[in-house]
Image (tube, rainbow, N blue to C red; front, top):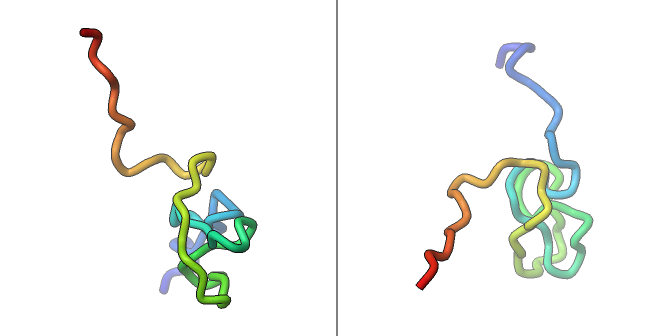
Length: 61
């Protein structure tokens, strides 16, 4: 792997995955630094990583 391709994650909570451990929300759920407790994952809403899909907007009725 090229040295310039390796960068530090933007979000230290989710390790740029957007997911944290439900039992330990200060640890990523997947990735190299993932929590190993076996708990469920939870979407991290306040991640500094941009969402892959834009949030839906409600149209006025």
